[in-house]
Length: 404
Ligand code: PLP
Image (cartoon, rainbow, N blue to C red; front, side, top):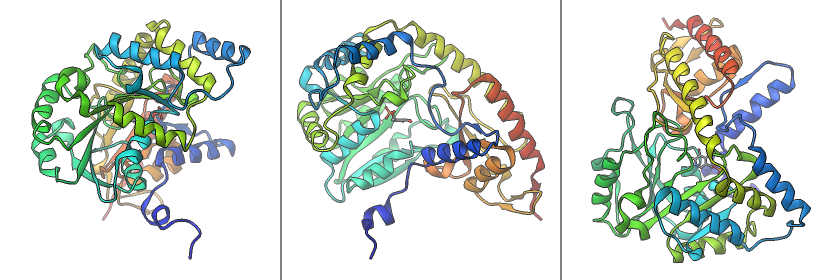
């Protein structure tokens, strides 16, 4: 009998993106020049004013436990952000701070799921959703979206997936991994359908809110359909917009009963987020915001460069994503081909391993996101790395031979 629980051993996969990043770092440590396009974190440094706020917090002795649900100053900054950017009103009892958006989602699922409760998740999905749902005792119900439809939401398919056991639907726009963004019209239509099912709550993961290209405007469901606000949990954080992945600050806004229950989970697990990071996050939300648009312009230029380059490689194709900093690349035409060593590439995991071994480029297989036949790259790295990576990917793809 294993010491490790059956649930963890049989049911839960480790975070693939973090594993790939670890493998890339290990190879780099051994002297290989690996280019890591695996993990989703901006390559920019955290802005100086934010770092200085953290240094000041340390110097002022702000180094003790904060209230479990977050420091008052940060909760006020979060309320201010929702008012300013999303035209949404929340009170102090309706927001909370956690150690990253990831913990917010985990708290929400732990606080609400009974065994067998279902959570609708649109594929391709962020790798952690299904695993967190399972850890919390729930059942992920996957609804696919398609490359040919620009990975947009199909309301009929979602409606068919709703059952009396559905507790949540998770929405993520801009989306990781495919970069799709839901329009106001799509959200209104979705809301019309969801209004018929009051037992279904909606978790909006808005972590890429600020990474929307070509001047598209971001819409959150609660802003578009205020009558559903009580059923909506907004998840956001400072990781992606403020280049603060390592500081581990995420936040939530939702109805008071839910936030209170999430607070119970958090107070008995982590006791809350790091005090110093919380003061840095206050500065991130209240301080100057101008670097966000310059970062965004850089990401947009990289996206344009990569989309063109990838689509010029025989056997690969991708859409131009509207947001986030990933390309979700179709590699179906290269499956069932052979490497120069005679190894067969049968699926996207084989393809990604091949790119790691042959091209020394770390990417993530589509199967990890619930979409076989694709792989994801992150373009949150320098132009030099990107140019070198696509050259290597191109060469590796050209070496593949049709099988038989
Ligand atoms: N949600 C999505 C869709 C993400 O891609 C990520 C990080 O990759 C997160 C949440 C977690 O963000 P955080 O660093 O705030 O935990």
